[in-house]
Length: 269
Image (cartoon, rainbow, N blue to C red):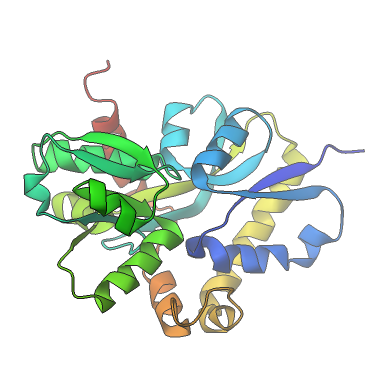
């Protein structure tokens, strides 16, 4: 019997359309050869690195740090040409005034934390200390000047911040990157371990390609069956959010990824 293919699933709204179609795929569900394991990006990064899953949408930094372990699944990513809406720095002060201070960062992501460090040092010329946290936004900003949130938490807190009167600066890291580089930022890549079952991987890649095509053509219908409460993320907000995400991986995306890599490993050669 062929070894099963263990697939990582990020439980964030950004990939809900893809997984909604992927998990409904007849070919993917007709056998017991596939197993889906859910988690946040940082958790899935560790699982695929340790060989506990075979393929996953993973933080782009995971691929850049360990390219010898993985094959890149072409044509797929989670990227943005500008604002991404779910990778946000909430700050009580202007970003230029954060130098020398300690900011909180989400424990759920590695790429976003590294991106914030690059943006602050390379584009603003400032250095901060970063403290991982899983605190709520209000609690975090009660003790620290800024807090980097990602995923659904960032989406929901952004909507909530709009409704309250307290002055707060909100910086979209995708937008800051694009403004300074003119290139898209690749937050996540679909990667597969080099030692996984190649036959099952080939079948999965076909299903993934079909799922992306179906998802992008039925976003409104998918929003109607999403698990997100309408008062937090309405159907219209979800569709707008998904339309703002680039799920492709073109030459432009690779240029952005390579530039990020050059900043990330600057001075290590």
